[in-house]
Amino acid sequence: MELVILDTAEEIASRAADVIESLLSEKPNAVLGTATGSSPLPLYDELARRCADGRISFKDVTGFMLDEYVGLPEGHPERYATFMERNLRSRVDMAPGALHGPDALADDLEQACADYEAQMAAAGYCDLQILGIGADGHIGFNEPGGPLDSVTHVDVLTEQTRSDNARFFDGDIDAVPTHCLTQGLGTIMKARKLVLIATGTNKAEAVAHLVEGDITPDWPATVMQNHPDALVLIDREAASLLK
Ligand code: F6R
Image (cartoon, rainbow, N blue to C red):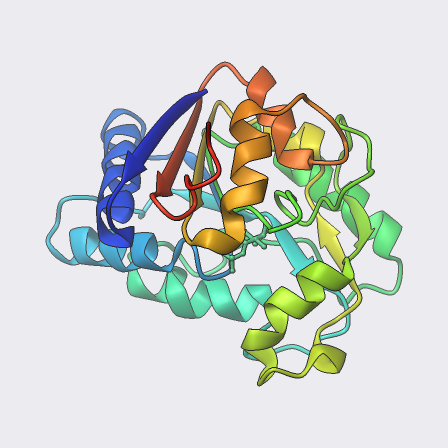
């Protein structure tokens, strides 16, 4: 795992965008895994800028979202499909319909998970997966305690995650869904490259486990230590508990 500590979210975004730019110049039809939440927003701004400048193109890119809330209706602003459309897909030249997510509106959620895993497998999984990290150490929405080799599944959000994400729901934790569909840790690990972004002191404990802790289901992101090509981009606040 390569760890890079930078001063600002903009520098982190620029470094992550460089990695994506280099991938797309080698492989214009790359498969890109996308994360939601606040951590990748400066990166999506930077990718939109580079696309507008003609430096990169997403014309032939296929995208796969990490996860989706269960229980939010089509078009809900915090639905991850809506989030990704607003923050990335509509701002670059990616084809409508090229960014996929698990179908959390399906009647049979287990089947929707199996279908999504099969769709990712058919695409050869991700060339590059963008990741954030939860304060409880989740990646995707793989909350603590699950198997380290899981595939796409239904997960239950922890109180910590629902409380952290209440900021997107006018501060109302009761409005934050309790369940989600998420790529499994095993699914994420199949990506050829992982790029994780973490900023702020709220992430410091999870980052310390990720970088210096034992690999354990209690801190799901630690599985990344087994990945042959993982880049961790953090700011000084997120690095503040590193030895
Ligand atoms: C988002 C996701 C989550 C977030 C994590 C951090 O698709 O899978 O793992 O990356 O909860 O969220 P932020 O960036 O909002 O702190």
